[in-house]
Length: 146
Ligand code: DQA
Image 1 (cartoon, rainbow, N blue to C red):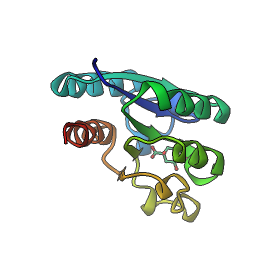
Image 2 (image 1 turned 180 degrees about the vertical axis):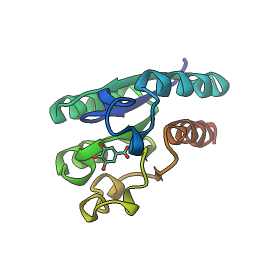
Image 3 (image 1 turned 90 degrees about the vertical axis):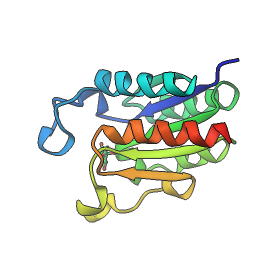
Image 4 (image 1 turned 120 degrees about the vertical axis):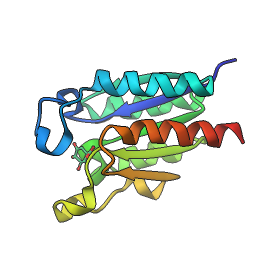
């Protein structure tokens, strides 16, 4: 059976390509999906990509991933820095988790330097632009091949 990777995106990432392009670039979430589909194909993986502005929805997808996904790639956006609930949900998931940030959060405001999700993530990407998602997919493919 083909294994599925969940790629979950938090608040405001629906505006990717429109909001603060000087920080997040011009590419959209559809571009991210196309990039990741190409890598998924190389590794024989399927992917499901989702975005929500609602914390509870992100948590519900993480719960669903317990039965349906081999791994999770997550850009929790602002929830990275605030959400113990997202961390707790990820702690209830057994597969690999990779945290992705488009921007280099450690070069930005001090409140972006703390990540609850990093307490669970097996790898963290920051500052690679949307290419970070593709690199995360590639790493995920390697991890799952082991
Ligand atoms: C982000 C960084 C977060 O600090 C911010 O709240 C976002 C996006 C990133 O991808 O660089 O919304 O996760």
